[in-house]
Image (cartoon, rainbow, N blue to C red):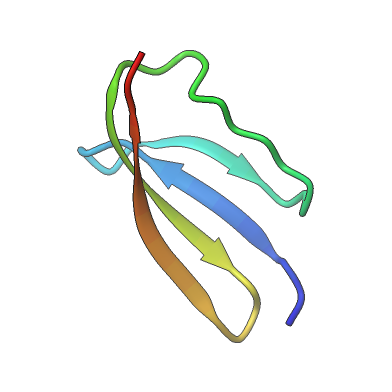
Length: 55
C-alpha cells in the first residue's frame, strides 16, 4: 500500500488542506475550532474519519 494523498474538509465540505507528501503535518493552523473530516487515499484503499480542533 502506497500513500497517495490526504484531503481535509470542514463541516460544509470545503477543502481546507491537501497534501501528497506522506510526511505531511497538519496542525489546524488557519482554521477555527471544530470538527474536520479527512480522506486518506492509499491508491486501492481509502480511509475516512474526523478530527476535532480544540484550543
